[in-house]
Length: 363
Image 1: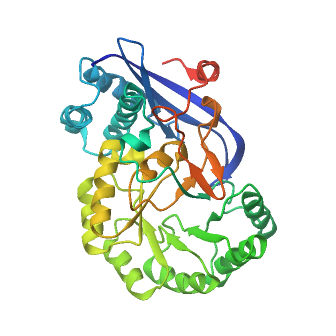
Image 2: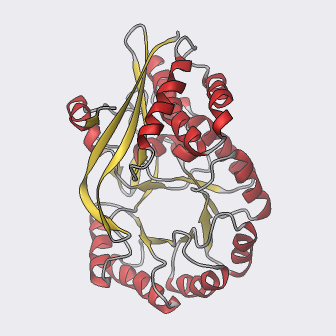
Image 3: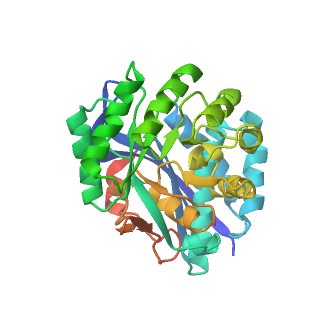
């Protein structure tokens, strides 16, 4: 069975709960939505989510041009298709916008393949389990007061999450960062895991000093404490801190992950589906991590990552940050702190076509 049509749309999708980032309100996210179809009318879809509007239209054009290469290709030849897309797009990469452009096409082809055989995506990808723990990562931002942070965390636990993640890195003193963790601990109790994301804001000495304070406060992991390119610095942190280091979402290439795994293997690697170029290379990174006993998480997109992480033995937790609820008819269900992969074919979720039309931006 062959792909016979590809369509690409740009959507501006509003958030149900806007927030403030870097002093600016964020009320929507751009989505580049790819749909691929066979002659019998089976349609697979995928999308990348982009915060900033700079170059987003260029991304649409790149995705449309590369998308034409899918027409006439066999549905199940994902590796060959991805290689062809990178052969053409890689002249302007690899990495960067090329990976973003390929990602939604690759996701759509995997969704289409699973629908073609009537199986949920997690089972087509390996089917190791059908659910795994999920942590709430939305609404716990730098700008919140201690009370607001505690309330946000408590609300997540009330909804059924057994782990939460807050952003840190804007306090001048390590003890003040630890205060934010303790405020969350007081709000959620001892049984809830607390993760922190420092968003690459520190140098190595700052990260060591603050890391000691945070591990004393009882965090589950410390994410992106320093610049991801400072592999030696990450190795230094891993050698002196007892807390798990999580990193990886800023890498684009297999070679970058290989260097990380060889020189400073993290406790948890976080793979960004758009940056890495789709499900096909995401699986390769996950396999590389498994060979080194490294746990895997995905960056945002819980409706996709619940399938991908459930499919592999070293899947750890799903980050729950809903950015696409408004264009989907439903989201995966949370049961006893675990996100459940839908059993319907493909990603198991349907596009809300009414809202897709509402949010589509002409280009």
